[in-house]
Length: 129
Image (cartoon, rainbow, N blue to C red; front, side, top):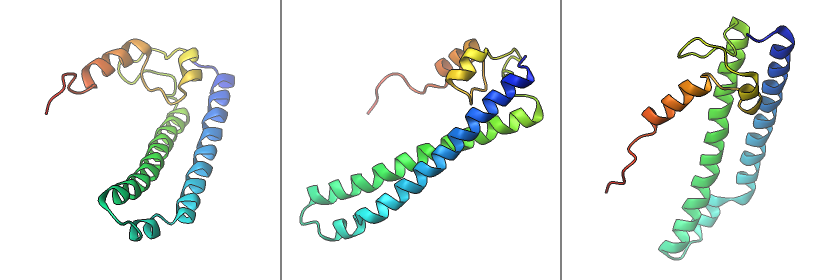
């Protein structure tokens, strides 16, 4: 079980990452406004240029989506800190090692349970058409 000092340490780490992500999202949005992909898309002359313009827009949106997903994970971790459940595996109830939390502060499962989760929720491992 984590002590109060460790909980404060992880809350500080999570708060900083939350702030950093918000700033990154803001910067991405401002940058995408400056790049005028809509203008670029309107100036395309063939399908390859249109594909590049679409890809640039999609890439920016995908990056922002990843940041938003991480913010949601941070919010959930901060709620676990507030409720006293932070550092406790949601699957088995064992403690999550502080070393794991330092590497992945939003972890909600211990290493063994995370390994099982990844092996059972990784999707179809064989390629299909």
